Length: 322
Image (cartoon, one colour):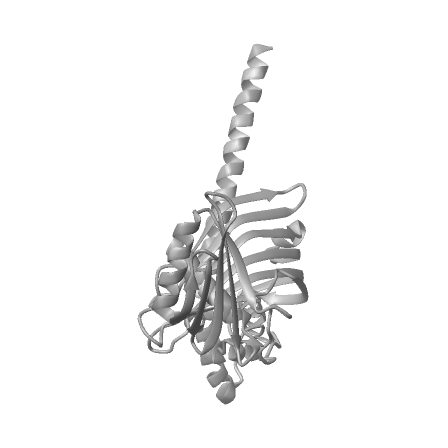
């Protein structure tokens, strides 16, 4: 009996080792494939695969800026859940019944030369090159084939940092509210990447000719749909910080002084009124407890709400408090 238990124990340990090794190999394969498609490095915090349920869960997926831009996070996806078709994958056909993607943040950077980080991704460069070649030879673009029957996508926040005005960037934040959108019949990894980026950008004022060119070349079908105010009926943004009132108020004042000019400020009420990038801005700092503070920023230009500008100012304050 003891021998049987010993053998069973060894078998369980061996099985566990095989499962862990399998997950590590697949995780590394996903990272390599992502880098091949985008030209940027990626990382995954946790990965789990279930053969019985035919599902994959990826947690903490991060894509970093392409070469030539700050070594910072470009795309932050806390969770990706995949339902795959095992039989098709065994036959070397990447078939996914459903993919759920939660995109927390996408950080678009325009450098001092006016180049966008998103435009420097390999998929955008290849699509632009292919567009020129197609005009002459009508040669199809090389793509990594796969089949996604249904994609569920939720996009949270788009942060836009513009360094063309100087060393300190102008920041706009577009809060898309993480509303779920669905798409069907995606047929390549390049198409998936382009769809996500074009869907994110079409709700902002950010223009990327290469993303829209890639959309046309890869058959995504998303073109600029004009500028949309993402926080309808609102002109502000709000965030809680785990810092005392004095620290938050000082950070708010210093932030406004560095990116605009203060009209009036009253520490007793926590109110700051300023002019930032031709926007009339109001910052309200409120102590919630001795160690937590709520900061609210509103922005208007010619009486029209500017929630993106408000979000950008709040992002500046947030970065100062990190």
